[in-house]
Length: 221
Ligand SMILES: CC(C)(COP(=O)(O)OP(=O)(O)OC[C@H]1O[C@@H](n2cnc3c(N)ncnc32)[C@H](O)[C@@H]1OP(=O)(O)O)[C@@H](O)C(=O)NCCC(=O)NCCS
Image 1: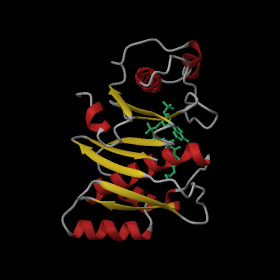
Image 2: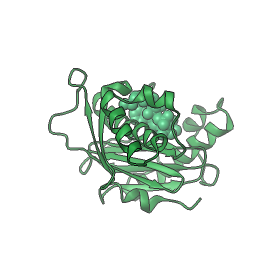
Image 3: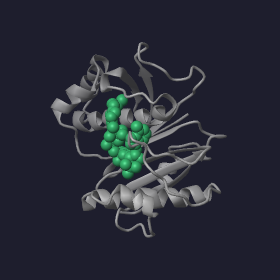
Image 4: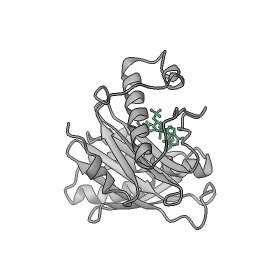
């Protein structure tokens, strides 16, 4: 699969560095502290973790940040160097990383999914009533409900990752409602007011792309 760094970078503001690659093909050595994180993991997990860490290290280098272990917090979110916002996502065959300085972005969230359709029972679990109504209207217009369901899933995951460093808040799927604009390939996400802890001055930009076999959602604030 060709590396998609440029197509994915186009979903973020210009200052965001994006690198992508195939797990197993990204070369380099992990720091010992990073190796310890996956020493008991299955091979798939070791490969995706390794690709994410090596791509992140190279992307951080492009921001002028020297190499250091990128360790996960107890909640599994990466502990980015001071002054850096970042996000990592992987599928079986693909890994992508985005980073920016806090001067330019307070938070980033990215999700990559294989574009296979989402099963109906999962669509029912992750969508709000309003989103289900939107899906029904799009289906009537001839669009693929399963693939749009996957897009909703991916967009919510990207939004979740973006908000997490600012709120440390776990969100249920029904806490977040999306409005997707298929023409402009953008979306907005609204958190139920009773759970919302996002700063009031935060302006989020949220875009998506369907790159052949991949759906990529990118949120930055
Ligand atoms: C964290 C989560 C979003 C990851 O999504 P995923 O599609 O399973 O997997 P991805 O490959 O896209 O992303 C995994 C990466 O996300 C990052 N990540 C993990 N937890 C995170 C968090 N709380 N905040 C931000 N990033 C996180 C990590 O870098 C991880 O890769 P790594 O372990 O190799 O470092 C998901 O596993 C999860 O915990 N979801 C619960 C919350 C949720 O989905 N709520 C409903 C949406 S609103």
